[in-house]
Image 1 (cartoon, rainbow, N blue to C red):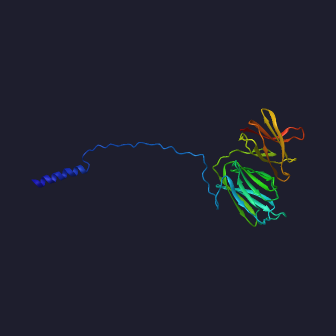
Image 2: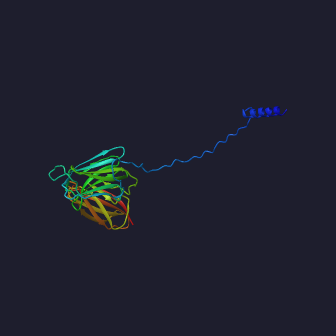
Image 3: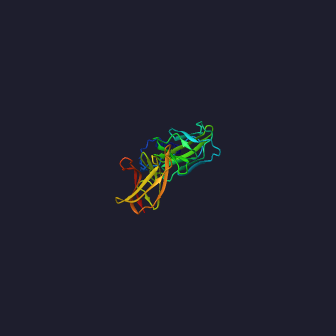
Length: 285
């Protein structure tokens, strides 16, 4: 009788393994966790081809050019790609031929972060200003500095980082720009004859404060009027270098009364004496 019992037990066990028995199944749905997608107002980091680090703010580059034959900015051109914008400065000799080496050059990102300034030890330029309107640059100005050198201001329309390279034979400076991260502290105030780089409109300043900009007028003088509560509290003039071939830089220190003031920079119309120029509103602390 023992062999029959063993066979019966094995048969029962095998039936259970083949699913003849009914089982109860419980399905547990895992809890769903929603993770918010992070957002950012910063632009994506753009890598431009070529060598060298991009800088944002302060000194960008400095080139010493002993024995340079560059005398004139002969041409300023630019090109765009999906990743960066490049501005080329080509130089000429005093005879008008292509120069072989660049002049001494300093490239700075001004405190406002809205202007990239290219200072050059040259005598002249065939261009004075240009509306650019690329993705990163709005316009450029060629300016005669107070020390009789020249500089070119690239006024940015968006934050940008910059790097600079030079070539010889022919002489060329290239400024490369890519999207940056640091927002503008303030924008320049601009009209057809005057550009105020600093201070920006609606800025808070201390007294004395420095007024910095450039102009292009027949008289090469800039009238400055400071008003408060509708009354003129200060009036002065400053001069700029000859602006017949480029814009002329001006700088002056103004002692200002505390509180809300308005500063006018410009000239009186030779026809009727009316004021022509720009205004900025400032708060003096």
